[in-house]
View 1: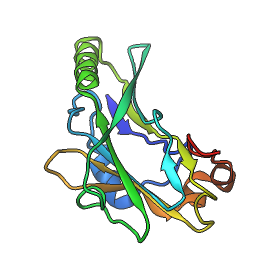
View 2 (view 1 turned 90 degrees about the horizontal axis):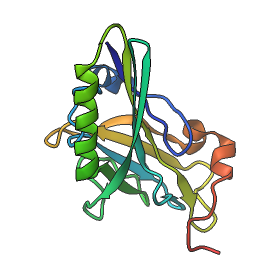
View 3 (view 1 turned 180 degrees about the vertical axis):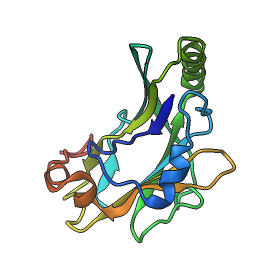
Amino acid sequence: MRRFLSVLVLAGCSYVPASTVARLAAIDPLTADPAQIELAVVMPPGMNPLPGTAKMTLHTEAAGQTRDAEFALEERGQPQNGPQGVPMPAGAHAKAYGLSVADVARMRALQAEIAAGPGGDGRAALGVALGGCKQGAGPAPDAEGAVYVRLAADGSFLPLLGPAPLTAMLGRQAVAGLAPCPGQG
């Protein structure tokens, strides 16, 4: 079965650094421990994650069948200066995300069910999505962001997207079109 990790962040797609590609290629979404996968999203001043939009998906295609499942990602507690080992540019802030205990169990059950079925020549993919919103006037035109992934609790965070200008990662229209964060007038 061909396997891969795909990422959609803040409603846009972007480049995965070459230094991370080989390690991501080794991820088997059907055997990866969902409790060990953690994401860290670094945002510039003027931008925040949109509450309730962090999601992880599992998509499989095998033996003529397609399966899709979506799991909510929960924000993880972390030090004020962001998750350990994640570079933090001046003024930036970060949020870490992982699956809830219930969704870890649900994803493990789905992995087991898929593994027990007909395998054949198929493929599996993990996907990640997170919506963003702007605070005040929003991020500066040259603001940068990044997404890091950690595949094991004792592992280090690897660059997944960026660091790069938001306009390169998401597109100028997406950055310009960020809605105000909830609670702002």
